Length: 159
Image 1 (cartoon, one colour):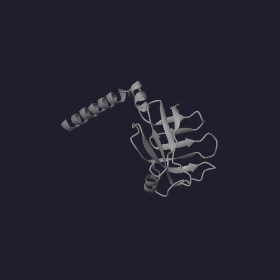
Image 2: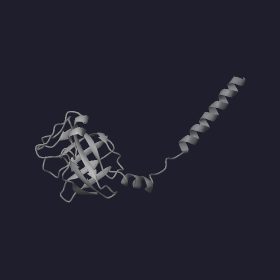
Image 3: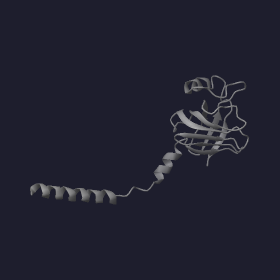
Image 4: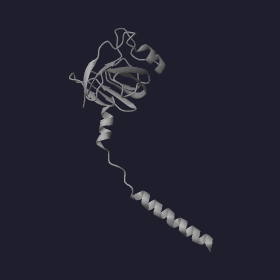
C-alpha cells in the first residue's frame, strides 16, 4: 500500500514539475543581442562599388557585383570576430564562372579598422600569386601581407 501511494505522489510531483517547466517562456531577443552582433564582423557588408561580403559564424560569401569572380565557402579558421583586424580562412564550396579558384581548396580574406558600422576588407591577391591552396595551413602561410598579398583594401559598410 505504501508503495502505491509513493508512486502516486511521485507521479503528481513529476506532473507538477512538467507543468511548471512548460509554462516558462523564453525571453524575447533583447537590444543587447543586437548590440552583441554589431560588435562582431559577422553580418553583411557592402561597398559603393557593388561588391559585398556576407559572413556568418560558419559560412562566408563574397559577391563581386556580377563580374564572375564571386566565391563562397565554409569558414575553417579565423581571428576573434570582435577584433579590429583579422583574417578568415575559407574552404571554397563554390566559385564564380570567371574565377581561377577551385572549389574544395582554401583561400583567405582579411579585415582591418573594424567598428560596428564600417570596415576595410581585402581578398588575398597579388600579381602572379596563388589563387588558392590545397590545405588550410598552406593557405594561412601563403596568403599574408608579408608575402605581398592584401595590398588593397576596400571600404565596406554594414547593411
